Length: 121
Picture 1 (tube, rainbow, N blue to C red):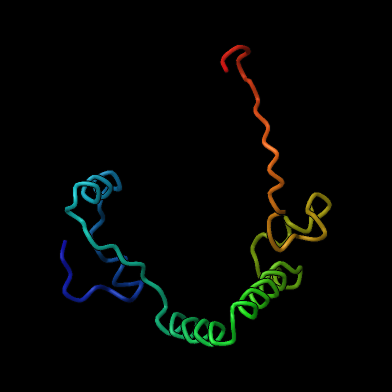
Picture 2: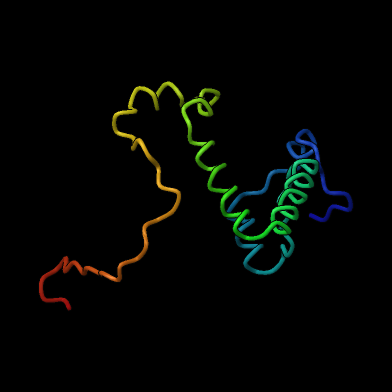
């Protein structure tokens, strides 16, 4: 299906004819469907692009520090109050860690191999 003017509103998107996901995957693999675009809120994207440009201008350290701070802020209990999962998370808060690490621990180079079937190595 070719569209001269791709839909931008949710109502326009939901009125498009439905394609089976297998047919879509096959057509995409065969090259019959070439470009795929992700539709998003234009204003939000412009705002995020401007913010990213500003952060890059300030330097990589500022970008890293700000994103870490934002990640921590997004993981606070207060920020989760609007989430539909808030009550469940509060109920099981004893199994959630108190401090969530900002990044994965550094690789120490230790690798373990588990021999599931003895003698297959």
